Image 1 (cartoon, helix red, strand yellow):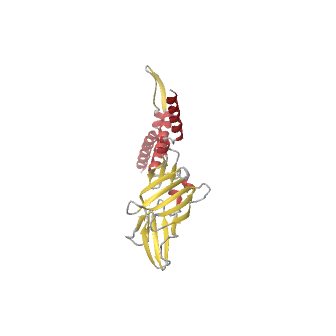
Image 2 (spheres, rainbow, N blue to C red; image 1 turned 45 degrees about the horizontal axis):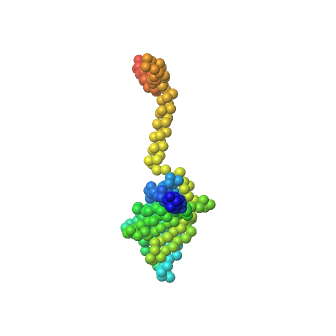
Image 3 (cartoon, rainbow, N blue to C red; image 1 turned 90 degrees about the horizontal axis):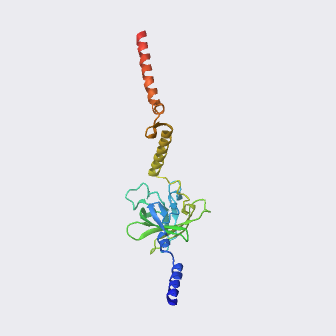
Length: 260
């Protein structure tokens, strides 16, 4: 009997030390769209839409330190978290067409080579609750990500800033961003889509309809109890005004014809 008691106590103690399976399952976030994810535990939303500038860029033609590149080569990066863009803008059929990240390699300051380094479609979201960091992977042509952007929650920042960029020939391009919008629910309130706006308008219209309708109903007693019926003086006011104005116009027209 004592052995059974010890085994039960040991199992309870070990289960208390191990992480709860529900907690492990709820860690991370669900992808809502290419620019937003919601926490699995329902604690909040992170939206990337407000991280860019007026044109949607988080970095435009920003120099990138690269390993293994020739000394006369200049590497630049343009990146937008949510807005599709194309570079160069006046050239069609470029590899950087409707992309999220574009890498520009210039040789001798003259010839430029544009490389697609990730699109918004098919990007993947991974959230680390301990570090308060959202990592988004952007893919170009294959299953291997070309760009991985790490958005770190920093409420002390007034705007989103790229801190570090790392580019190598064997690894994806890594970008570390400090942003207040990487914090939960920080910049998600202003990100309203057309569907959300439509639902808000529909809800307000329904509420106004029921409020005005309750004011326009008249209760009365009957054999079956208290009932309510529409108040004709309220619902028909507009119609009565319209019907009263038309005969007046006709009467005025008849008077003018009789005087002539």
